[in-house]
Length: 173
Image (cartoon, rainbow, N blue to C red; front, side, top):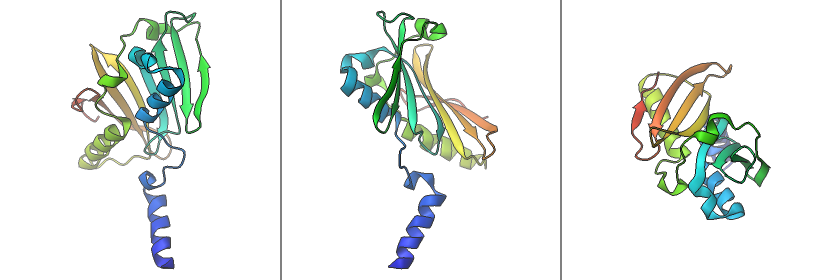
């Protein structure tokens, strides 16, 4: 029995997917905002970002269009405990004029994006340690931009995936 427990602990430390304490998916973050701020908020998603995912990040930044906010957008930072921060940036930049996507139209979660990224990296024999996620609307299509980083923090690849139908938009480079 002790060997079995040791084997599980060793496997969990070798494969981050098994040791996901504190990590949450993009859908988890969206659900958190929806519960706290109302489901209607989710129809105005502009951007969703998560950094240092192993495979999922410990916090996400969600940007929503909000005509009542001083810069035209409202940002929420979400972690496993809930909404950790909310702000209305004065200079929203491109986010204020970016297209929105309804969270309900997203068919590819960050967990599915990671599965695709991991498969493509394996095919290319490309090792990586962490990933950064960014969901944005490009040409009316919600797109996951996923950057891959090695253990030293150097970018070793990037890929673009449609969040609407999970197709690869820009192959792993």
